[in-house]
Length: 137
Length: 451
Image (cartoon, rainbow over all chains, first blue to last red; front, side):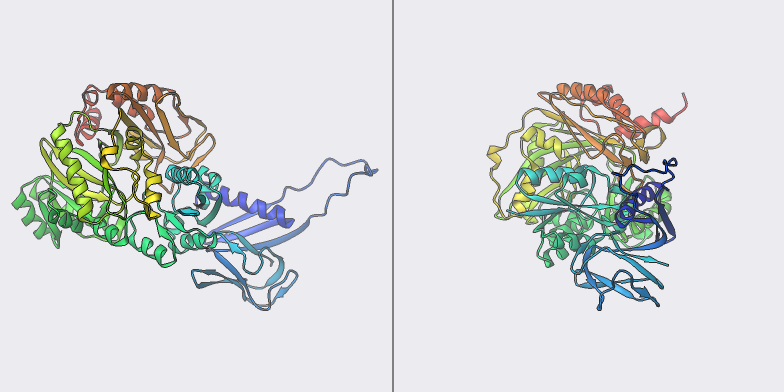
């Protein structure tokens, strides 16, 4: 991948990162691996008496996640029973397939892990590179 | 009429098609690669699908993903633009199999015209003059026999070819083995088809092509000719104009007649272009392009016909809304291709970020482009950034207008052909009109020589 492409994909990943509320996302595509991290909130120390009206910042969980994205354009068919957020995967398994022109393109978990996000629903159309699942290793 | 069209292309032509669709009240679906996520064609379309990573083989040539995007979004037709899948009969067939109308000719015609040797034979049968030469040659020896019969110099050409790839000039018998091997290897690499044929090489002919439109009800018209003789040594067109300057009226009429006759003979439908080599009063058919062409705007500007809209109407089964008698050209139009290339370095393509982009405007200027200040030129695709087109009452006024327009153009961040083309417009020989395809290569060769 060229730097331009990496920059474009990194931007797309940053979007997924913000959406899911993760601290870090890592995506592997062939020999290229992109990792996106949220900037740490190292704001200057606030006075101990916080302004009451301001809600406390949402804690960001420091987690390492693999985002599994679609290689094709098609319709998502979730595995049955459907994979749910919080589920433990104790082996490499099929999470879904993306149907393209009647061909089933399997989406595998690429190993074990903890499912921390399911970005898609049954029957949803997806494009190339669209995030489907996030798995904590 | 169609409700939604998928535009299976990128760059300026994707925008051009998007504009035609929107003016016809048709919704659009863009496709894009990872490298084109921020491109204008994605923004202007009503919907957009990423179909793959940067390299075209995995995105803009990814037939399953493209067809899938069309089906998911509920399209009823696909416009292929030019390049990529525009002349891929298999793609047209697959689209039809999935209930999608391919905006272009039938797969059978695309196949016949796409195979250059077959196209030549069909044209000969239709009474169209073709360059002396052979069918497919199976070996160097066979090529040599043909060359000796028609006389050197000859041109070795890939039957699947286009864009100057798989093509070699051979001036003497001794050059043949090397030329044969390199042309074959190039054709094999570019088109997965290494078959070659031999053609008489004409010395400095003009490249003149005729635009045709044909509906599915027997209506056939021509929209005059375009002169595309200003070509880089790689045979890629750089400056095009319509009508052709300094062309004998009888020869012009003959070209138009041959084009419409041939179009009928091969039962062609939709927009197409017949390319000819013209040398003195001799006219030879070269090939037929079964797509909209890059240089179509020069024809649109003098005929007042929107060729892309006509393509869509024809594909939707409508009859042409005009006859030959309704078509009259007015004035003269010139197009300059603004490429991200270095004219001082063999037109080497450049990639990078465009830091400044200012296009010209004002009377008689049309700019078809997909780039803007800050946009990225990916390394994967054709280097064309924009087409600047000028129209005037006369050739001279169109040239003056183009010189003014190129002077207004500022593109920074990559090297471009803007200043180089402006210089060419000022050349005495170009100004006189009617240069041949050898003009620019010989001008470059003279420049390259040490003084």
